[in-house]
Length: 264
Length: 373
Image (cartoon, rainbow over all chains, first blue to last red; front, side, top):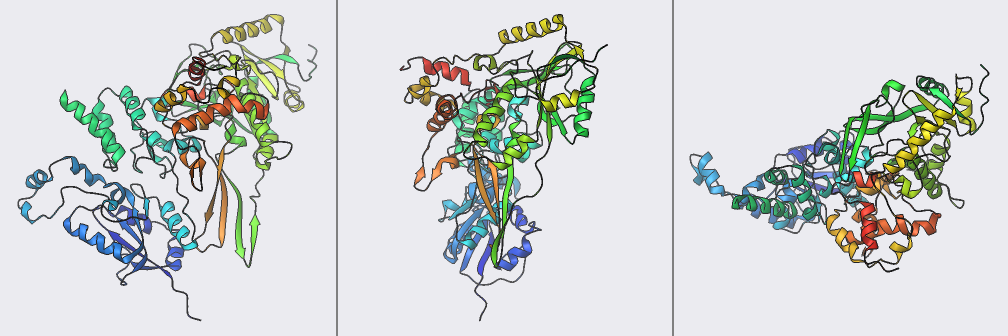
């Protein structure tokens, strides 16, 4: 009897630091089982061999920042049965989306002797701005456990079990003392989607919002609470302008503070 | 001097240094001794080897959304109120494996085999004893008992500490749960400047202190303790009028205050997780890639988690208004019908640890304005 066809998985990189792909390679305990369970058809960071599409599952890391990427993502979408955007860049634009509030041409002129050789888009945008995305896995970097859960669920034909709750719930499950209440630190935990296991507060730091705003993130309540803790409102705006700073909830909250400051 | 005759209900004076003896006797019997420790600028439940590990000379200043540790100006060990953590973590763990199933031809189900830990809890406040009794009703019902909870609960040894220093968000006096423990402990302490007043609450408690140099607590010591407790009732940082509960809540489910509080609540779930009586959980299955192994885990969950009320077809509590109302109308409303008591013990944790300062006592007062009776 011929061996059953394995599910093919391809990994593609857009504008990003490769950190999410590295998380896949960092699955030390599960990587061999994963490589046995699926056919890794295209994953340049892991192997040279590239199989042609179409692919059952495509993982896309990075944001769309160049005209070339804007075309490439459309082709990849055509080759993908299921397209999963992984990480803060692919789901929210990433740190490079900070330029979305600025004049990129000016940056290019300041940095490069010949900016005319650069081909870039005025904004760095998430994958879902360009093509239909079937599933988003958040984080900077993406959570290994969530990637594995998503692939496992797909292989078994069930819905992936992904959290929707805030970071606060994980802090309390971990027994971590709330840094906002006990230290008066700025923290995005109450509105940030869980996924990191509440890493920063467990190290005595406020949450940076790496996994982005949770569904229904209540910025109207958190922002005044943060501003009451820190005299300079720009600190709150800067905290919101991090790797998921282009996610609409965070971007709007930060922009309204910056606009208010500009008027002063 | 004649040895004090020990019985349940016996009250004696215990020299402070003797608490070390109690702790070492408990450890000899196989208990882990756990009590108030300072970690990351707050009181947490941590290992206590002896008096030296206790937060002597410290107290906490609490207000809505605020918690700070400051010197108390005296040398007492138990002047600091508990932090966000409560004892429920030991009976109802935040994460616990229920079983693992493996397929090898047929499915085999294995339950975790390690025995329930034996923990001696040092410094359990009267409000927290009331909370443990409430969780007992939820997890050890006549018709269903959760074996994980029951085994941990039966293995526990409770050393209560009566409260002479209530915190800024405390209101146990309003809820009738403190500041003095009425029972359900093995030993109870009231801390005066130079001595503990010890009360024996169970046979196990009597066994631990047998043969120790206990003196009868004379009338002046008992009077000092009573005065301290009376003063504590006056010093409660918060009060809650409970006379019209649960009807106040249940008859005002469309009160405009629900909408108003929803505008200030982020649905972060902190209040429910620090609440020593909240018992909601989720079960999650973690399956292996090949589908031949799965582990089911139980984790703390919250009615404020959008995923908690998500069902096929949508979310039955789709917004913060419905989630906050669910929490309060259960805790101070339908809880009474379910368990015969209200679900709030007045510990104040939900007020202190709310990052945006929502105060359950203010919410009840706000509902009373323009309330239908």
